[in-house]
Image 1 (tube, helix red, strand yellow):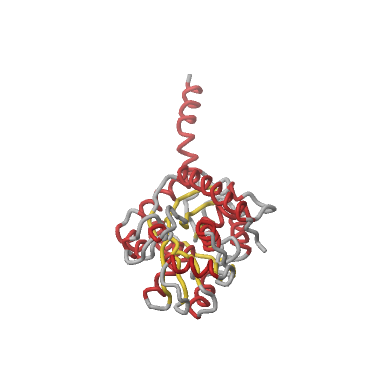
Image 2 (image 1 turned 45 degrees about the horizontal axis):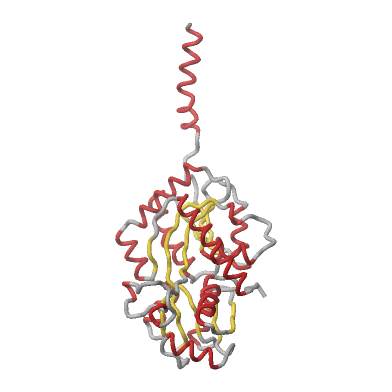
Amino acid sequence: MMRLTRRATLATLAPFAVARAQPAWPDRPVRLVVPFTPGGSTDILARAMGQRLSEIFGQPFVIENRPGAGGTLGSEQVFRAAPDGHTLMMGHIGTLAVNPALYRSLSFDIAAFVPVALVANVANFLVVTNRLEATDVRSLIALARRDPGRLTYGSGGNGSAAHIAAVAFMEATGTEMTHVPYRGTGPMMNDLIAGTINLTMTGGPPALPPVRAGQLRALGISSRERLPSANDIPTISEQGVDGFEALQWYGIVAPPGTPAPLVARLNAACNGILGEPPFRARLETEGATAQPVTPAAFGAYIAAERERWGALIRRANVTLG
């Protein structure tokens, strides 16, 4: 009887012993990889989230820019990292939903990333160089139709969010423009301000500051409704392209196999940050809208977006060339 009692006591205490044996997380700096160059929406949002996560968890969340191949180089690095919560990625519509349709011979499975937290939706701003004569969406469409292929639009690279948004715009308006891919949003915006290219469709974080400074002109935004922080800029939909919507979105993912309890803890922290009025206001000033959801809901959203944009890529025959 004493032997049985001792066994029962040990069995009862075993889970607590395991719990005590589990290492604390995070016990060292966390790498938050941005698979693009500095200056774009992904980088800006990652730095904002990383700063608050560092304050909450007491360990640095270090932003690492790992650009290349439309975000696939940085993505693969995170995919193959240890699933211990110390390596994460700020993914977005391009890396998580578009790339599977563009890169058909990848050595890793993008769909296997573990969704952690959807951070924000960001409307694309259709912005043009001040040298372009178009003053609104209708006049831009007329200009593009008058001389197909003459207008040039920039993006942060083939298959980037800006590239795909512009493809959606051309499909919706029956226009043809020439794509000029760059190695990142920052260099593209510099050339747009200089007038080297004619226009782009990119998120609020890189677009709004030069627009407010008078360096660029915003013709419209890609959301269904105007943004409170940019209420003077009409939607593309209300300017004759009925129902047009092409949003960027950004969220944190982890390597395959990352434990569910750790993911839940990270998700709760991220959603808490997104609920903070100062942080939400900061997002809104940059044209972003906080999107706190569960990891499961984020995963379902990624799957739906992968289907939607994959179909567009196939219809428009978008390639990496």
